Image 1: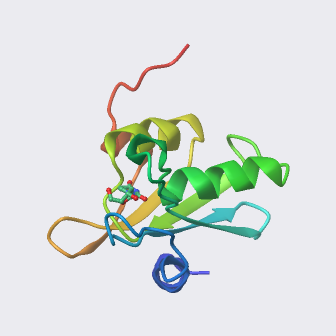
Image 2: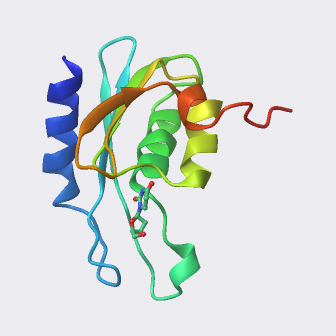
Length: 121
Ligand code: THU
């Protein structure tokens, strides 16, 4: 699957987001090294801070399916990942992060591009 195809999957998935408060629908699709894909959407809550971002949902679902940091090749996200999600992307050691940047362009970056010198334990 090309990065562009992965991104188009994320666009399709975004329709299923639960975002009644912000009305900002986000989709994310993870591509595992074994070819599996895992989808995520943002899920909001009336208690606003409890909402979760699409990429964290996709990554959490990937872990639930038995995938671990290092098993994931790429992720596509329909928005520029927030600061907290950048730390998650660093944790999972993805090769590529494909997303629509703030100029509306589809770009491919590494987790290190997005969060240099990220925190490690
Ligand atoms: N959102 C994501 O799903 N991913 C990001 O990286 C940026 C923000 C969601 C969270 C919230 O539901 C909505 O976008 C508006 O902030």
